[in-house]
Image 1 (cartoon, one colour):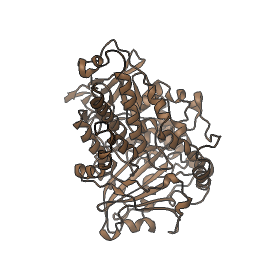
Image 2 (tube, rainbow, N blue to C red):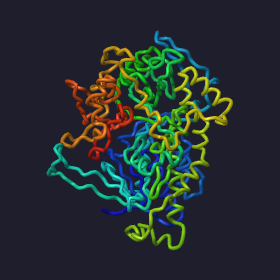
Image 3 (cartoon, one colour):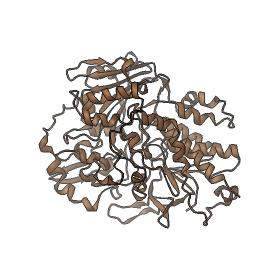
Image 4 (cartoon, one colour):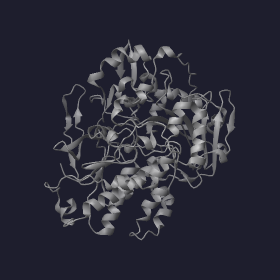
Length: 590
């Protein structure tokens, strides 16, 4: 295959930001680097899902460099107008910020903003569609000369002598379910780069294989990563119910009914112009009760008066789900390895207290690009070694490990922000919602991250003994089944009806991309159903897994690429691999 050099493997905001910054530097400093992006979705943005109340500081920094490097910031202030012109999508300024505790009986209590962590204040932020922002950035990147290949899934990491990453291979297409080649068969392409930047989002399949191969968690002294599952709907609502710029977060019903409840999670509800309400529920995947059904909890949440009033008379237009990182500062792996690096949520740069990761992801892309550019363009005859100059990669050049990226990230505001709230997730895990809130309040208002202790003990080399989200699930005999109300088809929906709103499509005649790992193949046969009452039939937000006559059936064509199954399965028995490129959800306004 052709060898395009530094290129993110897949572009959520981190990969797009990195590609744009590389091209800005190429233009300003005179040595051009070729940049290529692979996107497994059918188009840039089609697999992007986020809340999203957006902190624009990293984006504004990125765009401030568009004016020939003079940093006068003209572009950085006009991004809202440019987004509207490019994507017909509004960035609505936050005007009203409410935090409620909901009760089972339909009541609610507003927490005064003065008591909330400053990181939860949203003044100066904007309600946006992240999938639309990604499309806008994709257009900008292409205009700068970045090559973007949508519909190509990075399936395999390629290594030089088994010791350094040299690129990725895309997935073979045109293989039937039985493994035979079809008339449409095409071999995957090897894409080689002097640096490969992995920006796959949370639990990216290539990123996870690299973390494992290079022992990046152990090398970084990191705890295991923990995750939440975010489930979201977008509604069009009538004018009388629309409050532009309104932001509401909640705790309590339906996930917590007492201050000691240990189910970590909460909800969001945002009003985005011209008439959209973005609403969703995030459930921490370290929950214990196997009968919890996050999708049904989300549907139940909408029936609370404090939520229902925003949606009445409206129409649900889109549905989706995606996992997000919740481990924070303690779970960050070593960021670099020979030949590449981890960006954005592939590394884990999400602030769970702030409920935001996009700003950290974009900043990591900027820092990565600056570190890579400096590394690849310094030294004698640097320009002659570029692919833009040679047309190929110099076979004698050893892949570099750009450790400067990690050093610069550690000095950035991203690390400061994550360090300040580093113990908060563990506080919720240990002491429930009451203790977690109390600790978060103390950390936010008093210690500001300066407390001399660490709540989780980084496990170092004993990472196999760490308590993953899968290991948090307890046997079904310790719990009672939960009876969820039937959907009404107006406010609440059955899962398969809602799934249609995600636009999910896969080529039917292809091998399942959801594979049972050979060493734990006994788990779905005699443990998951028998011990845990088949939790995968409840936690999957796309109805992929069901047991028919006590045998597991995998409906892989329903998969919305949320990655939850690779995290929460008993003994993590599923290996999530990429399907043919272009498959999966077709998010438009997420």
